[in-house]
Image (cartoon, rainbow, N blue to C red; front, side, top):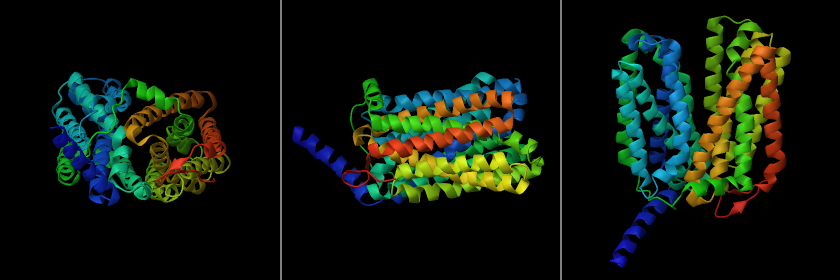
Length: 414
């Protein structure tokens, strides 16, 4: 009996190792579809909030809590995912999380009151947070270590595409076909994604037995603490500034609404390209990608502070801002899985999800205080300082944080 179980376990491990030795790009692409569907669904309320609120009979502010519910639950789910799903084949977990996207979208499409709508968004938050927590750990089992940066760039391309397309397409289709149709379309995207994932994802047996102590043990490792600290400082600085970029463009270069839309489109396109540039840099050093993105945002901030009155300069700067930010998630995610123990990469992924959520929330809150107290130039100044300090911290302390790129751990000179 024990020999049979050992043979079965060996067969499972061989399946996973085969996928790692021979890049499973179709499987990686299925993860890209997954993040595209989940992030698109996350962003849809931003473009559909007014008709949604009117249809379910609540204020716009109350309907906006659908966004808050997704973010809060996503942070919790990211931390808990590896613990709750331990022992389960990871492809089954991925299928289940994509299934939550489908169920959430269907419930949202038929919602007639705020409670039902919030339920839909809670389910989406679970799927989104858990998916993000394990996407990097899953990718590193699907490709050789040297191909991980390329795989992460491909996955984050789905995020950039969702960021660029979700709001404008959602707004257009919501106006033409109704907001419920948009959520039905989101469910259809989820179904297509699930079919692809069922077809191409190999067996990926669970590794390790994570529990709450695993999270605290990871937090106690200096290399992981540095990654998380870098996220909180750099990403909070980014979101403090970018959350209020529209008021800046309205007040300083005094752009029209149409011009602002084009500038924000340039930001999205820049982010899409930045993902691949970040992947190329990360292939050599994930820390270098983080430093590059952080310092470039700081340079953009300086240019906006001194040249922001020029419409052309502002437009170019915001486009470069998107390019710079596109390199950061690839760098941070890859850096984390390189310094974390391989059998605890999913738990580390939960920590990075929580760190991003904390950074986003704190950046938006602190940015709001700065805008009210010092205007839009004040919040751009803070974004400049925060990204400069964060990038400098990674540069100075990163040499003590070795990256596991090949069979062993190496430290890159930055």
